[in-house]
Image (tube, rainbow, N blue to C red; front, side, top):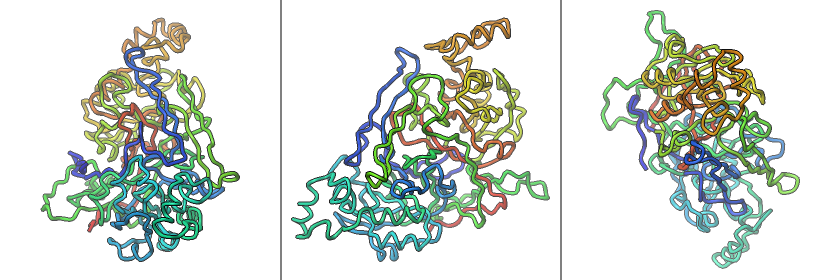
Length: 560
């Protein structure tokens, strides 16, 4: 793989996640990820997968509650934890070697307080369903974890399956193990010692970090070697899963090779009437620089303001009125197993989520078909109030404030997110986009669109009404005719045109935007909306985040 460059801004994106999906390597002891295609184009005109999985698969973040009772879950951790500057340390290690404090001390760039720290041992190159990757990997020593805690880092990521040495986990002679039985005699034959004597504590490095409130990331991969030894900007936001022990994430590093892109804080400008700053990831760098100039990373001397735009995800969440429903099962719990792990059974089209073109049209790209640069940039949150069955028109979009510009990320606030609940008022009677407004967004050349309603399309343009495999709710046509004197199909003749028009033109669409949307409405912000790296995926739940710098000190600085 190689970095992906945003054609408008020149920003470089480095993929640091392994793929998730069918045949993802599974940590020994956990069940295989299972998929079932529950709707498909030939029969239903739409394609959707049901999945069963734990979130301790592929590249994922562990919350403190995974190993520490009563500690925070992934949805409780402050958003600013998952974004910021940090370092990729090249610390090559071989079979069963430990990462010690001396390795961290001599590694460059130097670790600073508040850094996100990713460790490249070279083990990500062995990522596979193999005993070597899981059973022979290196790991952090307890002293190394203590050193990182004292340094005040905010996340630690490793390019192996566990933060700890495998013989300090259930793979070896510890609780719930040995999951790989041959490891113990192999270690004794190789060293002449019992593994339990050399690794007497269970998950000591992991527990040390999580007890200090430092989330951990396992199975870091992708383009990691390309940025080893560099200071970068990282993002890896997990879902807003308030009970979550872990979450698969899209881990991405961002660099600006030109060093002249800044953030727009959402204010009108300076006293001279000129823009106070240039918007981050919404401009094309205007200054030509030599190829030798160091890439730059995002930095700030002042706290940034982070706003969550995702609804709560998890057990009991409101769901679109179709089958199947989400089920959450506890596999391991602290009182019995000393660790907390859950399994999820459901589909991605729940809560705040992004659709892929393949979801609504055959022979189209999956969720990884969108270029990664579409998931980050500046844009606007616009207020377009609408009531029951209101249609968002092209005129509404044209008149919205701030003005929607080319390459913007657009978040539309109809007010419907305040009704998000297991309630027909939200799902069946909401407003929505339709054909004309979708065509306007394509013509304007926006980067991504999010709406605070049940779908990218008006509900009467979905199969809740007389479309596709519908009507799922025949009573809606009776009610609509009583209200208007017309049948639904007369006013909404197309099946999900907004979905099809936007996504087949490369514009990702996000449904069920919510959270703190009202707080940023009417402002120009920087947005993050990264789905998982799921090559077969027709959609993905995700965390949508807005960032504003109130003091306009958010900047880029040298990455070397």
